[in-house]
Image (tube, rainbow, N blue to C red; front, top):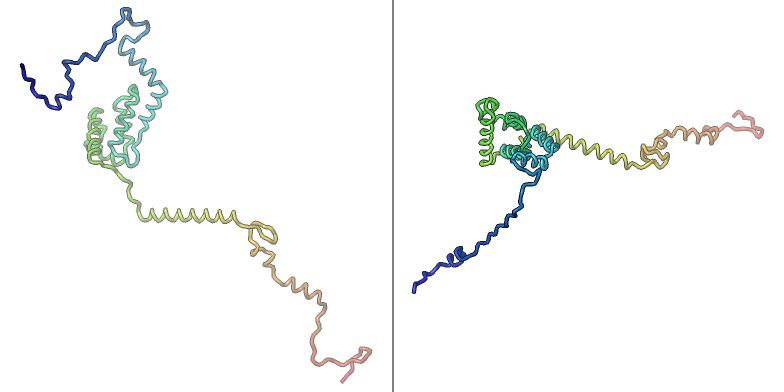
Length: 241
């Protein structure tokens, strides 16, 4: 009697393919199967119908405009910009834009710092290279920025720029406060004018001369005080002393 060798746990948990039935069952091919009239017969027909269905002319025009007007965002690394540019091209495989124009659109959208770095790496100017050489150079530099995480932050503001911004902010706050207070001014309680408060009414600021004259008019002619009056007779005549 043959001795069966002891199997490991791993071997015991693995299925025995020799004792398992075939799990894949192919459907039977119908005898009357044939290509119908107007069906796709070549790869060019397949490509044409696919593009007409999923990439209409309006969508292609929109993506072409996005490709030609692409710009690098503030704080966006070269790798992120290059990756976004390639994704935009993949969205419209039939954009029909020549390679040299694609490189030109990408270069024109670069930030000033990355544009100088690419020109320096290309030996003076990127346009002196062929489209293939320019694409390879940009791809290598983009990969380097991905590895080292190069990112350009906004330059710090100078002291005079900061002070000017603070002054403008303070001036704006004062103007807003003045406008709010002007809308909340109450009308005068005397003349009902909204242009001033009751304490500043012009009627309260009139000089008191008119009132004094009016009081004097009702009192009649004032008599002068004489400590030594002249004696008079009963009939009103004065007498000499």
